[in-house]
Length: 211
Image 1 (cartoon, rainbow, N blue to C red):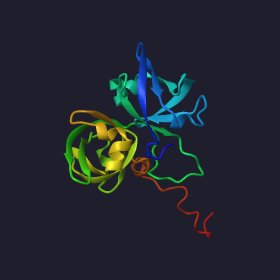
Image 2: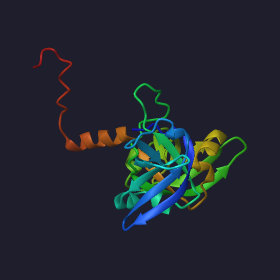
Image 3: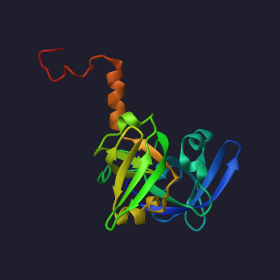
C-alpha cells in the first residue's frame, strides 16, 4: 500500500523486452535506502516488485504483459523520469490517501493551464472509473495523490503547486501524454457492497439485545 506522496524521481536506464513482458531498470537512490529483494515500489503509480539491485544505485523489476496492457508503463523509454514511492509503513503519517498501486485506467492530458502561482491540469476521465471520482475527492495520477478540483462526465482537473510540478513527473507532462489513474479504493468497496443488495452481517453488533 502507498500514500501517493512521491519520494523521488528515478530515471529509466533500461527496458528489456521478453515477448509480452519486460524487465524495467530504474536508477535511483532515496528509495534504495532500506530496500530489500521482494519489496514493493510504486513506479508512476504501478506497484512493482524489486527483483534485483543495480550497480551504482537502482533496481530491476519484472513487468507482466497484463501490466503493460493496462498501464502507461509500456510507453516508458531510456532516460525518462518516473515517480517512485516505497510501500507505506504502519508507523508513518498517511500524507496523501490510500493508494494500492493497482491502476484502474489510463488517461490523457487534455490541457495544461499555467498560472502565476499554480497550474491547472486537465485529464480525460475514462468511463470505467468515472463513478468513483468526485469533486474534492482523491485520485492518484501517475502515483501522485491529488485532489479533484472539478470534473464532468469525460474529464477532470486538478490544481498543482510549483512544488508538485518540480518533485513529480507531472511537471513534465504535456498535452497528449498518457497517465496512470487509480480511483479511491474506498469508493470501489462501497459500490461493491451496495451492488450486493443485502444487509451487512456487522450491522447488529452494536445492539446487545441481539445475538
